[in-house]
Length: 318
Length: 180
Image (cartoon, rainbow over all chains, first blue to last red; front, side, top):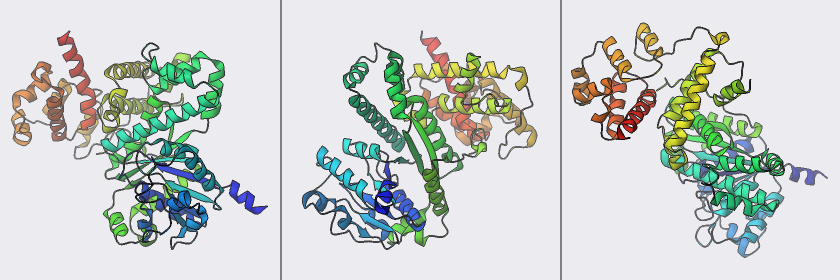
């Protein structure tokens, strides 16, 4: 039963991060290209329902069929998928206009994810687009690899914290809902000042201290909960450290496990390639970004952290 | 032993860490959580002054305890600073905390007059002097002091984040003492 086996091995990656314009689509399409070139049958799903534009990264015109057809005309996902011109890589586009992430309901969302899981592929990469809408968070949470992209700018970082917090809180809520402890979480959060709870981390510690049972539920459910962080548009060596710092801050403040998977340098060639309708990973042989994306992809596959150079830690690299 | 374990945990190190590791990590974490980098400012209310003070206090405590361990007592490697001669680089690397006095020390060692800094930065010499003397009441708002410190640190090729990280907490402490 080779088919069933391959279906079970499908790995789903979801890429989010809160703020728009941080390079999520670029990185998702580049990583997908990278995986496809390694011979993995890869499907890219553009789930940025309000503003799907992944086709641009392959020099394609907007595909005629999109997720709208899946929702409204019940067209199977496999039929919506178009070839990207790169071997092993197909694209399922979101839709512009009539559909956005707020207008699909829970049942539709579940259906979409079921069909995504059933797709015949080795890798499925989902580009979630910006924002922290519930549909975005839930898709993110159902992926095998959860990936956030940010840039070393305060606005992007603030939105990334918000996104990570929302994801984490949603995850917690789903755990407690499954174990029928939903009201406890909400009540505890409402009375957070009384319990001296100052952060999400405090909240969890408070709940864990309160009951051994909750403690073991939590340990079990959260053991595989890891967020992969990619830092895009790095301009100085010091920027590289921002990813490392963000990882620590997330662990210290949100009690969340983050792996810093790597960074990509700022390179004007990237925008040039996109505007010229050239697939960046195929056409650009000079940019350091190509190598960086390959490394990031490898780090995410193997769940290894980016080795931040020691000399960056002492704060003396400008 | 549980205590030691906590200290190492706070510094995110294992017991195999050398004194150099401990010092580097301490500086790095103090810089990160004591400074106001974008990673920290983006936290907003999440990281209140109260939380920050609490964390930094525990960090200092852990560092002092581990730093005093006799088995860790090894020589510290010096760290490279661009555009400075070896002696001076070595000397600056020894500075544990950038206070007003140590900033003045750097300036005097480089034989620079306050007026020379003024010529480049356009910061009035009396403000520069107040920074060195730690006359905190001269700076009604942190934002002014912050920009002066950045200019000051840049002038001497010091790490601005480290200077801010060391100096601003002193200012905040000094101001809150004056208020109460």
